[in-house]
Structure formats: C-alpha cells, structure tokens
Image 1 (tube, helix red, strand yellow):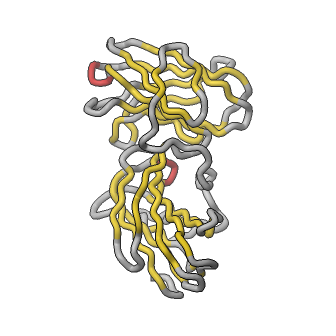
Image 2 (cartoon, helix red, strand yellow):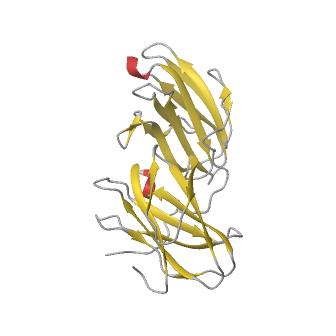
Length: 255
C-alpha cells in the first residue's frame, strides 16, 4: 500500500535549514576545538585507539545531527560518542552506518543547555587518518544536486552517505497537475522520502511508503505558477542509502 505523509510527517521531514553543500571547504581542527552548526571540519587521528575530544555548545530542545566520515579511500570512519553536559551518553555510532563508512548520530533533540563533548576514536587501522565532521541543526547532513527532471521520464539518483538529501528541479507551467513517485532502483534497499516545493520554496507535500516495497508516491498537485519546482529525495530516518528511481507524472490522477 502507498502512503502519503500530508498530515503524518516524521519529525525529520522538514524543509532544509542550514545543511552543508557537497563542495564545502573544510576547516582544519585540532582536538579540543569548538564545533558549530553548519560547519564542515577536518581532523586527523594517526594511531589505533587514539581519541580526539571536541566541544559543542547546545541549548535545550535544539536539533543536532552529527556525521563523521573518512577521507577518500579509507574503508572505515572513526567511532563517535556524544556526552551531555552532565556526562550522560546521549548518542554513539561505531563508524559503519547502513553498510557505508560513516558514524552518524541523526536528529538528536538535546536534553539540556550547555557544553556537549564529542569523542572521536579510531578502533582499528582502517579508521586511522583524516576524517570529516559534519554538524547541522537539521536532520540532514549534506545536500547534493540531482539535476533536472523531464516530465514522465525516469531518472536515477543516489544517496551515497547516511543523512544525504538530493535535490532535483523540474519546469512546470501554471495549472498543470502532477505527482511524484520514488522507489529503490533495481534490487536496492533505499527507503525514500519525497519532499515537493514550489518556485517560491513553499512546501506542497511530503510522501513516504511504510510498506516493504518502499514505493513512495505523492498526492496530485496543481502548479500555481510557471517555474522551477524542487523535488528532494532523502532516506526515512536516515537508515538507508543507495540508488533510487524518481519520476514526475503529468496528469490529474495517480500513476
């Protein structure tokens, strides 16, 4: 069964705030550095078992997502642990999320105001070397471009890392009706979420399929103005990655 999320939208399915573009220039950091939202940082751990501690100031109720990813060519990411101001562990990841190298703590609602401590540790030789830290106050860590869609033509996209979101654009004329479908490509396991917005950035709707098929489909929309509409594809609760098919159907009915 197909399910739309016009009224039941997961807490992470919100329009983007300050995520990090894929071509962002990282800031070189050393252990003890203070990390801030919307930044891409690069550090290095050369020895097995080495640990680097970083500090994040957070306020009660803030949304925080953290991702630590290895440099190109490394098989594993370091593991991470996030401690609250009172020393309680509020999040951890072992460096391998959804089968892809990356330690991710997604969409954490901070329990108190104060200094949080992020510990990055290399568990084995494959995790040593350079690593990148992405820190956002969104459920998404990175926005990646998808390109331009043509109506009624299938396109293939890919979410390469946990907490990625891919944005596509399509030109539509005022008064035209359309819906959007996304599903795993081939025998993939990606569980896609569709987010549609108009040329002014106003959200039209969100869709997700809760069944094992993972075939998400939106309701039918009517274009209010001629212009570029944006289709964003992400993974439900950041738990899957991989390739997916996406298509925009023109017409009044669901396909």
